Image 1 (cartoon, rainbow, N blue to C red):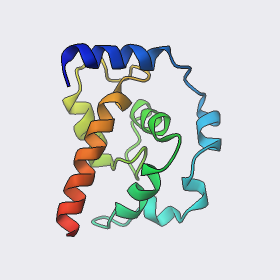
Image 2: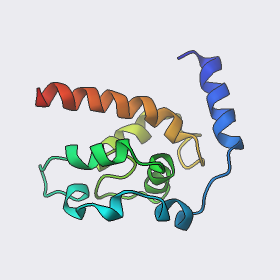
Image 3: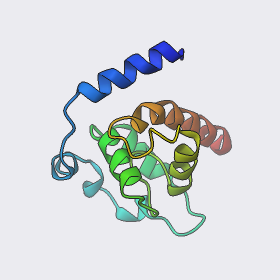
Length: 122
């Protein structure tokens, strides 16, 4: 993705209204599923949770909430804690904590992790 395309995507995301925490959570798919999938034992698989997240309509605000609140446990917005830490380390420092910016980066990051998971599983 070119720098111009990234800037355009960021601009577009910033102009979209950001739902409050309560708004996005009420639309989330995860409360209807097994919480153990989202909070597996150490070393357990996160694949089932990530499948749920993939189809969730509020994946981006969920991920942003986890990043903004430094959530250290579970799968949020399709990423595990370890993946969220990597995402924050790889993002420009001025983007960390900025509403709506990290999910734009995370979209490609999630795809990369899904590819990695598929390779490991298959």
